[in-house]
Length: 321
Image (cartoon, rainbow, N blue to C red):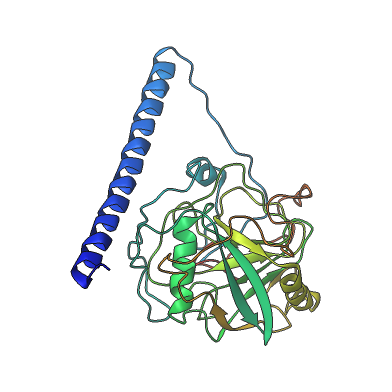
């Protein structure tokens, strides 16, 4: 039977092997980027330059550090796939005392089953590490520190182009965040069907704490980091809040039915990445990503919805902070 010293040495060797594999994966990623760069240079030299522009929707999701909405250019510069390690640089003043995530190389596969308690009712969610390893890592970190506890969802939109409930700002004003930001993890072809849970922002790479839940048809630019999905049972809770409409009767504003998040819970080992996670969407989840096509956005100038940005309140509220 191995003694304590032998077990420690075995654990150390295992850690060294894991670090070596991580370094090898990162080296392979850098090599792929170099190859892509060379190919791009050849195309430029030969005169074959293509400009890819993503069409902009009139309805957007706004977040917590400015009132600007995510634009088509933001979507075009979003990374095609999520990458690690993560970075959480300081940004603005934290609405609630909190530390940025300490784990900068979180798991990037599998899902984490968590729960948002809103108005005393359970809203089960499935967080997808593959789609947004850094975003899921941040969400779990904030939840573990109680950042979302006893906060309200400050924004509801009710229009043909945008149907979302936006939460995650402890100030309840739409411009609060965690005091740090991080990069966008959204493919330029992303869709946001009913049941989508995503981060609001104020443009590319301005993710923070604010998030939104899509409860109805929505047309959004592919500029928002998708964290995962909300279960069908959870959507019933959101639908009940949405049914009350907005405080001033418009299409965008504070919900009449107050939406209070008592807490966000996740497995105790979810944050350190040592648990066993299910790779597929569990039974009972909403048809996550993507489903039926979104309707055409309302014409500019009409009272549709403000952007889901992280920071300011375009119209009546802001987004992810």
